[in-house]
Structures are given as C-alpha cells and as structure tokens.
Amino acid sequence: MASLRELQQSFAAALRDPAVACAVFPPANLDVYRNNGRVAFRESLERKFPVLRRRVGEDYFRQLCLFYRERFPSRSGDLHFFGRDFPAFLDEQHAGGDYAWLGDLARLEWLRVECAVAIELPALDVDALASHSGESLEHLVFGLQPSLRLHASPFPVFSVWLNNQVDNAPPTDQSRADEYGMVHSRHDTVYVRPLAPPVFSFLSALAGGRTLGDAMTRAALDEAALTRSLRFLFSEGLVSSLAL
Amino acid sequence: MTHLDPRGVAPGPIPARAGIGLRSVHHEALLADRPAVAFIEAHTENYFHEGGAAARALERARANYPLSLHGVGLGLGSAEGIDREHLARVRRAVVRFEPALVSEHACWGHAGGEWFNDLLPLPYTEEAAQHLARQVAEAQDFIGRQLLIENVSAYVAFEHSRLTEWEFLGEVVARSGCALLLDVNNVYVNAHNLGVDPAAYFAGLPAGSVREIHLAGHARNGALLIDDHGSRVCDEVWQLYRRALARFGPQPTLIEWDSNIPSLATLVGESQRADVILGERHGLAA
Image (tube, rainbow over all chains, first blue to last red; front, side):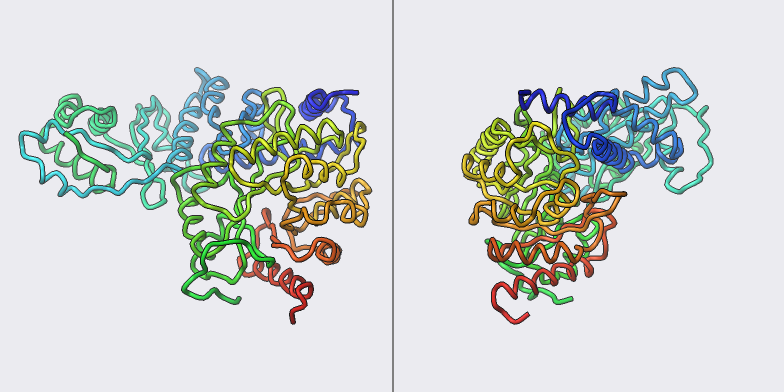
C-alpha cells in the first residue's frame, strides 16, 4: 500500500498535470482544487500588483500569473509571501525588450506590500534637532521608520505608478530617464513618492547609518537643500530616533 | 443591529453563542458599530506581521470581543513535516493576541517543496491519522495551547482510505489530545459530493470532542457543491446544525463568509439566527 508521502506526492503531481494519474475518486473533481489554486494565487497577485495589472491588461496578467506559479511555486503556507519573486520573473521574461520596465514596476509594488505590514514607530518632530548643538549636529545618526523603502530605477516607474491610479491612463513615456523615490507608510496609509536624486542620495546615506554630516557630503547638499530635506524628512514622519 | 455596551467586554473564554469571521472590509464598521456578537474569529495568517492596519484593527477589536484564531496554512497532515517558521509565527500571534481558541484543519498543504495554499484532503488511513496526530501534538506543544482541528470539505476521496472520516478524526483526537472544530457546512458538502452520512458522522465523533462549530454557505457547480463561504447558510445546513447541537451540546458557533462578503449587518444577522437556535438548545426563549 502506498505511503502517505507517496499519496501526497501523486496528488500534487496530478494537480500540476491533469495527465498524471492519482488514486482518488472521482479524479475529474481534482479540477476543483486546480481551479481553487489558480484563483487564489491570481487574486493574491492582483492585490499586490494592481498597477502592473492595469498596464498589461487582464488577459496578459492572467497568463503571467500562471507562468509565474510554474516558475516560482509557493514556498509558504502564508500567501503573503507569494509574489516576492514576481519582479525577478518579469525581468527574465522581458529582459532587454520594450517591456523591461515591468520588472521594476513590480519591484516598486512589492515594496508597497512590505511597507503595508511594517511597524510604525512614533515619529520625531523637527524640534528634536534643537536639543543638539551646532557642532554635534553633523555627528547625528538618524533612526528612520522601518517601513521606509528606497528605490532607484533605470525606468520611470514612479511616474508609471502615480499616473496609473486610475483606469485607462495614457502610457507613460518610457524614454524618460531613470527615477528615484521612496515608499513608506504613515497612519496605515502607504505612500509612493518620487525623490530628486540628491534627496535620494541623502536619505540612502542616512538609512545606511551614515552621520548627518557624511550624508550631506555624499549627497552634495548645500545648506539650503539640507534644510529643505530635513524639513521633508520630519514632516513625513520618517525620523524615529536621533543618536550620537 | 444590537450594539455592545460602550464599556466593552472583558476578553475571556468564548461562550456557547454565535460569532462572526472578521474580514478586513469590516474592520472599520466593527470598531465603529460594535455589534453584539459573542466573539470574532480571524485567520491567523492575516495577522502574522507586527505592523500594519490589519494587526492594529485586530488589537482594537480584541479589546471588545473574545477572539478565536483560525489557521489555514499549516497543513498539519503534510507528510513532509511542519513548516517550523510558519509554526513560530502562529505562536507569536497567539502570544500577542491571546485568543480563547486556536484552530487549524485536518488537511495537508505541501509536497515536493511546493505549497498549494489550499486545504487538501487526507487519505483516511491509520498511517495518516497517526501522522496528523503526531504533528498536531507537536504544534500544541510548541504553541502551548490545545488546538481545535476542523474537518474539511472534500471533492475527492482516496481509494486507499480504510477509515471513515469520523473514525479518522476520532483517532486524531485520541492520540493528540486535540479537540474538534465541527464545520457543519463541510459535512453537508461532503454528504452531497462523496455520499458521507451526516447522522453516522455525528454519531461517530467522540461526544465531548467538539468545542466549536462553523457554519457557512456553499455554491453549486454542476453536480458538485463548492465550499466557497460566499452566501447565506442554507436551510438544510441550519437543520443539520440543530442535529449537531443535539449531539454535541451548545457550542460557540461561527458564521464564515469569505467571498461575496456582505455588509456587517447581514453577517451579524446570520449570527443572530444561530443564536436563536442556540437559545432553543439552552432552553431559553428565542
């Protein structure tokens, strides 16, 4: 008599390929499980990649979902993780072609998925800087919100994402240069924001644990730009701690 | 809709009354309206993460209602073992939200390193019963709580099965010390799809083992009934529910509604229907 492991392996093989025999009755009803899987995985990707779905259209998105699951089967009983490799899969599918930007759009959308479940720490007000003297300011290390994700793309994916918050948006000009930006959550809302390259460099340096002085130098910010960037950081609630 | 006393209720054991499945579309309405349901049940996997709106909403709801955490992803009957990482997340959720009940399913979910994210049916053999019981016991030890194991709806049966479904579940209860979550709709669906006899099913389950009951709607697809949790509980399932209460006594009863989700008021209305029937069993005026 077949072991439990063998029975489950043959059941799994029959789910993947209807031509494979499996000792169940009635075998035709395995279609219910096949369909359940198709729908559950597709709906999971639909929730996570809404703009990608808008851009490629319903039919192609469904095809992508099927191929993706074959190439990157689920590795967890928690569907939250399904889709983590969707950007890499799209890169494979469209490398070097006119749609090479799809992978990076998916990467941006996955950052939103991560952000949506990240912890939100109490945000500091800009006044917190006042307790540090002028000299010690440059040595400050900023603790940023755990939800903050920074993304640099060779494609204008931030524009694509922001332009496609409505159905039937016109295509974004893909000849535009690379884009930089961030994704973060505040009060349970996830925000996608493009950033000017110097601000992106500044934030990246701070997020990497560099001191304020070092980050300012790396981003080549003058004092006026630094003041604007700091105001932005604090007004967006991105700073959760300051340390020397 | 009847509303809770604004002072709220202390979290605690779940009474033998009706509750509702908590879905994200109802988070806001539940917190604002605070309908008078006996408990809420949440899918454990939806609350694995420390941050985010869902976790915060559950924390707030938890302050007003007793909670049941219902897992859908462990696949405890999987021959290839338990996903320890997933189990650790379940334990963290149990520590964080302090549910009165913790449940999972009598199913398997992964093979060959691939997860199907579905409640797949087990062959009803001695080996499978022993394996499921061993992994249920392991999970209970790790989480530090007794698990309620739910019978699943099925669309196929294994030719290798040698036990009835109720003998299989009874074996798992005896070996692991778990209790059962009896899904009456699943019994009805299996009766229709696979010829299971509900009377024999109820008579065959260990009498004291059922600690919670699930009710849900199903869909018809040709000759098959599909357990889609997408509609009201049908009259036949309400009848079967009365028979289950006669056999197992009044139990906390949950209305599950996971697709085509209605307004919170409609969902609460279904739970009130269960409360009326539970009231009949308690000998109370409905």
